[in-house]
Image (tube, rainbow, N blue to C red; front, side, top):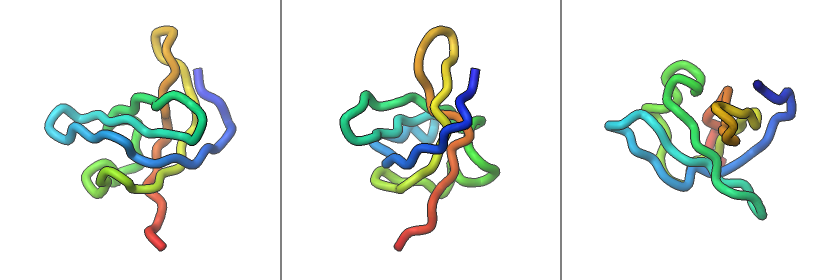
Length: 74
């Protein structure tokens, strides 16, 4: 299930060789995201601290980030 709400967060942890990471939003728990839920090529360009946009979702009863897109650095 996906939510149409767009949220901005920060990559808190990244496990490139395993294909997943966690995105944090202030005052909320970090959300899991998988490389396949990222915009084409964005996962390979992400670093810890990168700003991303995403949709809050739910997979197997757990909150996740889907539709993850890397935001341009300022």
